[in-house]
Image (tube, rainbow, N blue to C red; front, side, top):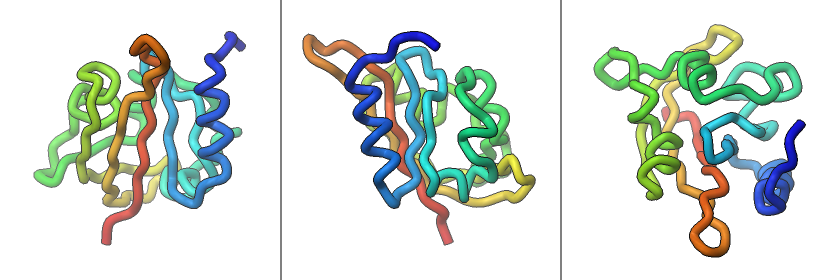
Length: 129
C-alpha cells in the first residue's frame, strides 16, 4: 500500500464518522474509501471491494443517465472535480454490486492542499426519491 497524503488520511477519518454517503478518490481517480452509509447504496462493504481504479468503479456501478443511456466516466461528478478542478453535480441511476438499481444525486468537489496541490476528490451522494 502506497503512502497517502495526510489530508486524504484525515478525509477518510472524517468520512467514516459522517452519516452522509461519501466516496473518496486520489488524484488519479482511484477509489481510496467509501463509508458505511455509502455501502448501503453501493450494495457492498468497502472491505469487500477495496481500492479500485477509476476505469473499474466508473463502470462497475453501471451509471445510467435520466434518458437511459450510460453516463461516460468523464461526465461523472468525481471525474469533473478531478479534471476540471471544480465542483459538479449530477443525478443518475446506478446498479449496486448487490444488483439493485437506485437513483442517486451526487455532488463532488476537488480536494486541494497548499500550493493548489491536487490531493483527490470527494463525492457526497444520496438516494433520490
